[in-house]
Each structure stands twice: as C-alpha cells, then as structure tokens.
Length: 387
Image (cartoon, rainbow, N blue to C red; front, side, top):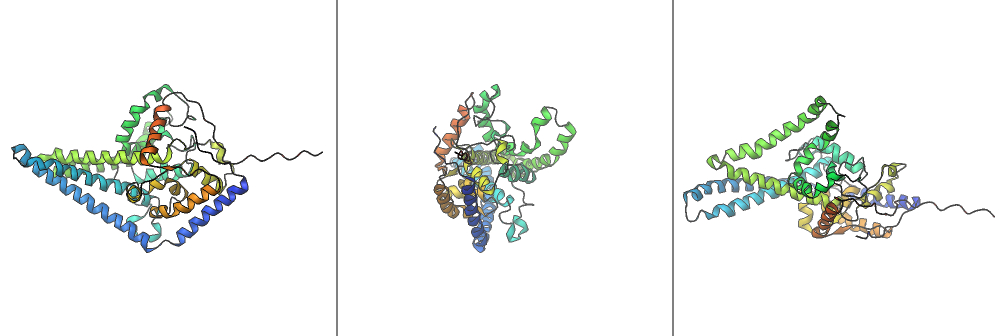
C-alpha cells in the first residue's frame, strides 16, 4: 500500500504545531466540569447494572437447563437466555475494560478527587494488574510510542508487524499466533511486564521472576476464582453453563480489545521510529511522532463508547490524561491543525483499518524490505556558498 504524503516540518513549524496543540489542551482542561463527572458516573452505573443483568440471566439460563435435561418442550428458551446473558456480561466487561478501567488508570478523572476513580488505586476486571499496566502502557508506551526497542507494544514480543523489525523464521508462525493472542489478550497484558524473554535468556534469575510474578499470580487467582468458581458454583449442578458463559464473555472482551488496540497502532500507514528520534525531541516533535504512530476509527457514538473512545487514538495519544469523552469534539480541531501542517490524519472504518492490520500480520510474517518514510523534521538547507 502506498503511504499518504506527509510533509517534513521545519523546527520552527514543529514549534508552532506543538504550541497549537498545547493551547487546545489548555482550553479543554479549563472547561472540564460537571458534564464530565456525570459522564463517568453514568459509565460506572452502566457497568454495574449490565454486569448484574448478565450474571442474573446466566443464572436463569442455568435453572432453565434443568428443564432442558428433563426434556420439557419449551426448554429451548435456555439458549436465547444464555446467549443474551453472555452478551450482556461481555458488554459490561468491555465497557469496564475500555471506557472505565483504561481511562481511569490514565488519571483522566483524578481532578474530581473521587477515590473510586483514582488513577493510582483503581484496579480493573482482567487478570493483569493495574500497576503493571501503568508501567508498560501509561509510561513506556505513551512516552516511547512506536519506538523500536523502547515501546514493548510494537509486536508485543510475539509479532513482526513492521518491516523495520528484524525477521526471524519464528515469524512464519505469527498468523496463528495472532489469533491465539487475540483470544487470550488479557493474559498477554498480564505477563507483558514480567519480561519472560529476559528470564528465558538467562538475564533474569528465577528468584527475580518469582518476585515480579507474585502480584500477577494473586490477581490471576482472584479473577479465576470469581469467574470460574464462585459464580458458577451458585448454579449448583448447572455449574458448567455459567462457567461457559463467563469464559465466552471474557473471550469476546479479549478479542474486541485486541482489535481496537491493533487498529489504533498497526494500520498500513502507522510508522515506527528509531531511538535516535529522541535526541533533542521538542514538544512539537513528540506530538508529530504520536500522530504518525496512531490511527483512528470512524463509527459514531457506539464505536466511541465500546472502544473507550480509543476510536480517537490520535487524540488519546496527544492527551492521554484528558477525559476520553472529550476526544470526539477535540478531534475536529486536531484534524484541522494536522491538515494545515501537511500531516495525514489517519482514520477509517473498523473493517478497513483491521483489514490493514491483518495484511501487516500476514505480509511481515515473511521477509520484507524497509519502506521509505517522510522524516519528521526537515533537513536544514545548506548555507549558500560565498562568491
């Protein structure tokens, strides 16, 4: 695919680019108030009640399972009740993961002073710990976005998605590995900060790995007990139907999260960068790197809600600690600024963007050449020679 044309900016243009985006941030922060508080509290209630509804419906389906076993003629209602219960629970888990957990952990609502949604103490409904996520995502990914060797999200140590990544025969297996990774995405998040590759290579002792793993194992134990022991046990002899509902709901949440995150970073026009780009990196340079390494999704209100507003990944990377419900309105001005400075604003439908992601996964499983990209900063023109 041919990359859209970007223009390399001069240092002076980069400064003005950064100043305009900083000014937009300042205006948005100054306008935060009750509508943002009402929004996040409505999300909390929606998560709570949809989770309750999903679990009640799964329990009702378990009871109907008794009629199914007994051969009652109208016991077919077990299946629609079970399906609706599973989908409702999956919706609650997606909303908690994307719009509540991810955004709260970024500190987007710390200004409210509400301990229930404090970015340093909130923990979410997945097997990964929030503390590890704060390090791998909030710090490393958002600081070193798409910088090879510093951003662990570039392929997550499993996938070669960019031609700049060195090819190894292992990557021939990445199409099926990508499918498995999608189904088990929360587990990938859980182990990401453990650096198992360092332990495997002998660069970390087993004792060090045990210490790093202890909080993760405790969180895993709590999550497995809740979803696969305690709630299923309430169904008595129909334990398995509730367990399966929880398993499918978690799987749907995993795949959806994977799709949204990959569409935000690995579309055809997303770029990676070498560590050299950090030398004397200005604020405008940082914004430009975030823009070139991110992609948006179209789709309207439901897409914004179910993606945790990561449908506006560009705006999120510009302003990760601003409440995500503001991204849609900010995006209008962000796009105008990008166009004015000759920068491609990467956005598209979910099928289009994810199609590009799948193409990357398939294409770069095989050896591929590094493409030519427009530099972030224009080279200085040589001084005119004296006569």
